[in-house]
Image (cartoon, rainbow, N blue to C red):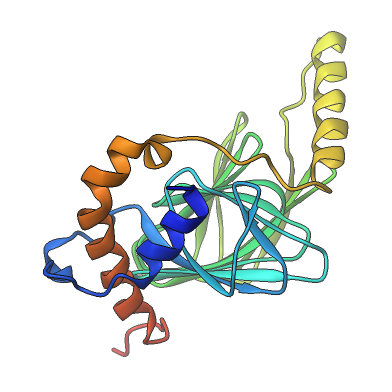
Length: 230
């Protein structure tokens, strides 16, 4: 079974004998809703698709995508390449808007951005041409790089270099090369990646469990995520 067909089948499974409540909210599965052209691991996705830990999500400059997981809503902005890691995100290029009560963190290069508490937090992270821009929309953030960790208060914005400054010229040259390579790579969809889920054995063994996870996420995402009312 091809990975694309497998994802479509998983996305359509609805509680076939497996109670969704038996699966934890941090199972590493979520639902992606494309707004225009979008790709997962280099394969074009339809309007919606299940995604799993390690999947690469890419959008064009004129498209976007929403990732809905229990307690979190993530918007992948246009012209972006983002790796979904379940409880965190990794921005390779472009940006994300994150709204979470589950402490979902975002990494861009050497910079890590995370909610300062478990309260509902909203923030933006973009990484373009080696410059990471961070905005705390609701709630405080912690921003960590090789210089240490600082708190970014609600309503504040800041920028960081994607790679830490180094006195070694050869290291600086390597960083510049990385930025150039990343900029070139941003224009093309990533190659489809093979993983555990693409193995025929894993497909057979894990289908029932993954179906239950995906059904649970589908049911949760029917309701818009919003901060809890005091």
